[in-house]
Structures are given as structure tokens and as C-alpha cells.
Length: 216
Image 1 (cartoon, rainbow, N blue to C red):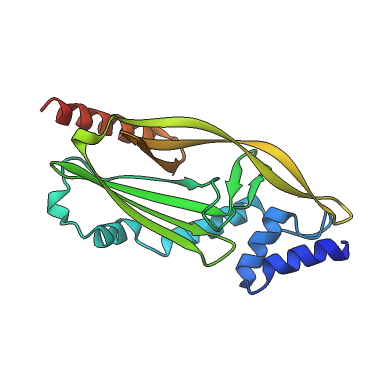
Image 2 (cartoon, rainbow, N blue to C red):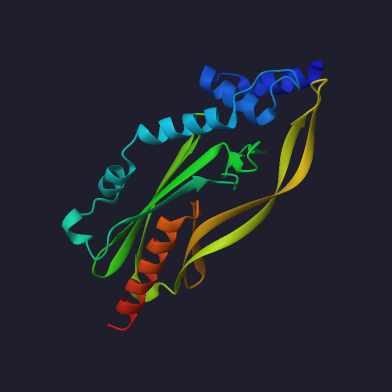
């Protein structure tokens, strides 16, 4: 590996934990073709362990300061998945695994609760290559919501690639991903999501509740 590329990786790893350094190597290709980095499944396991370290549903209720007895219009809904959007001061690392699935260094969890008159949204995003995190809450009245929807998105990202000599180059790749969206006049909330039977049923249930509230 060239001194220049060594310096790039060294700078990225400066002050990081051993686990965070492994994540950086996973996305950056380590030192080249013959360097050993973690498998896709190893990275997924690291993400899963971080997910299990926090009870996000309970944290959402506490941060939103809502009474559980007041949010029983329908069952709470949660979405989660890798986030491919850069944060305000935190670019994400992106990689397509050997299983053809796109992954990033950012993971977002969203919980949505339903009261009689409004919905409450809690979002938490953590970054696997650093200690950074983002946490936010929102509230919407049913009367202001125009749509719930799942959407298929594509985004062009700069993907680092390390050759067998250890030189790092950048390729432009199109990342495909799904997301959940909530639309109100002049604004839209987007949530990372892995589409499956649960999310399909959840979104249909949300749409049915919104129609009911609109016609009430």
C-alpha cells in the first residue's frame, strides 16, 4: 500500500476502537486484495449486537414522554435498515456485499405510535465506524397527513475500491434501496426500511387508519 493510502486509512482510524477499525477495513477493503477483512455476515452480526443493546421501543416511549395507554389506536409500527444518506457532518461508508446486498455504516430505527388524534415518531441512527448517533422525534395530526407509502429509491454514491497494490480509488455506483415515507403539506419524512411481509402489512394498516380518521 502506498504511503498516501496508508495515511488515508490511518487518519480514518485515528481514535477509533478496534471494532470501529474493523468496520472501516470492511468498507475500505483493508490493505488490498490479500488483506483479511470481516465477512458480510460478520458485519451484520455486529449491527445486530448493537441493535440488541438498546430497547428502542421503550426508549422511544420515554423520549416522546407519551402514556402507553394513549397510543393504542393500532399496534405501534417499526421500520429499520441501513441508511445511505450522509448525515449533516457525517458521511456514510457504503459497500455491496458478496451476497449482492448493499450495506452502509449507518443504521436507522424508526418507531411510530398512534393515539386518537395524532401519531408520534421516534428515530434513532447509529454509525458503526464511530460513536456518533442521531436521535429525533416528531408529531403529526392525522388531519395534516396526506399519505403513507413505501418507495423504491436509487442514489448515486462514491464507493471506495482498493486494488491488489493497496491503492484506493473511487467508483460511482447506483445504490438501490427501499424506504417508508410520511407526507404532510410541504414536508416529507423518510425512514430506512427493509421491505418484507411485516412492513407491507404495517403500511396497509396505517393507510386504513388514516382513511378512517379522515372520514371520521
